[in-house]
Length: 332
Image (cartoon, rainbow, N blue to C red):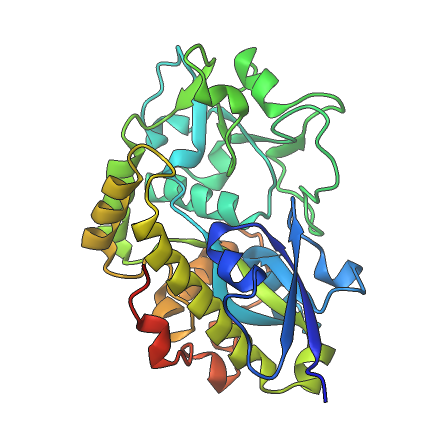
């Protein structure tokens, strides 16, 4: 009897390559990974059994009683946000606290990454209500993204006019800064009109980890509820497969480190700071991060319903990935 086929829509993160290529399997199931350029809407695509989902939108849905998706605490997109604040190259601004009272653009109001970035501003004394926020696409022509969510926006949040983009508004001086999870292509050129607000964002991020002990989670993997209920062992099996894929990716990356000039140095520094795993999966190792994020959604009024973090991942099999000893073997 053939095993059930589970189709997942995921962006092509490199740590998912072992899973997508079949090097890592999920016992009892056949996983098919649909590589996506953008985050899929799992509920809007009936051919998908699950996929990559915004952490913010997942939490908001569960808080509102919508349990059509079952979250897997595998945060396939996570990262520090200090690097995500851009200003003009000639801007006098150099600190997060200096954004108080400024005009700041961002790529989506309820987005997970932007929620974490606004949390950094709040920690520096910049209130959500003390910024003139403008929501819009980073570059002209972007479409197909829900930037506003389903709730009324605060009075100090407005939407860019059709045809305008955050990067051009910033370049023209109509914005003082932009919050974006992805960088405009010209940032990687010598004559870029933009720079990071924080000259040494890596140093600020190391300090953040020292205070909080986690790297913020942005996206997680979800399954349709009917799929999870039809296969009760699938969530735990999928969590373990994602963990094994990540571990194999880490091992292979340390061997094949010549993909960028200084990757080996980055890998060494990361291991010294974070230990063997800077992006742990499972509820146990993400409890502090999950609670902090839920607190921010409430504090920023992105989510108005009470949030019970314990209700987000109630399946005991999701406490920690059940990884076989073979997954820790050396790989050359």
